Image (cartoon, rainbow, N blue to C red; front, side, top):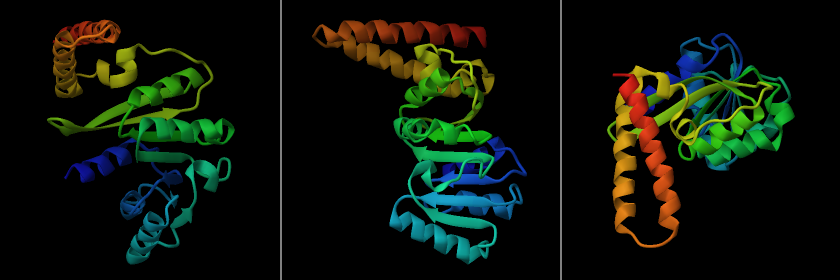
Amino acid sequence: MVQDKRLLAISQMIIKGKSLADIGTDHAYLPVYLIKNELVPRVIATDVAEGPYARAVKEVAKWGFKDRIEVRKGDGLKVLQKGEVYNVVIAGMGGETIASILEEDWAKAESFGHFVLQPMSKPDVLRNVLASRGWIILDEKVVGEKDKFFVLLSSRPGDKPYSLSPLEAELGPVILKSKEYLPFLRYYLKKYQRIVAELNKSQGEEKKDLLIKYRAKIKELKEVLHGQG
């Protein structure tokens, strides 16, 4: 199952042996997985909504992990104290939502050592926010196949802002350098080419800027794929 692969990928990206908070935990599947496999000593699992919070409490109790997984109800990083954990996972939300959680309190966000982030949409928004703050993108993974992909990235606070190209922001600077993710990159090349084909059929002045944008992405992505053989 892709869900199982996603949990495995997250578990591979955390700093093992260090405490962890799972923001937006829902069923607490990730915290339970991490404790079952002795990957972290303790977890704080959080969710803002009553339903997911209750499901998480039930799941933790079912496995008898109440002494190692604390479930808290609250929004974003607000339920954590500064430096309370080392790893922070924010997965299964839109890139804009994840970015807003970090931006709401940079001082608190930067008191944690390591982040694993999994945006369901708008990864470019998230990566650009990280870059503008100087956060280092340490690693990126793609889980999935065909047209259903989950993208994960690990990051830590830094202090030297930098910029990403539109293609790097959307697909990921680490992913673009990896031969492991060629199917993912080829999928996006075809997607961009389809968009250009549709734009060529459309009318209106606004299409000119979009054509320039997507043709530039196609050119850059072709160069990346050519360089990777």
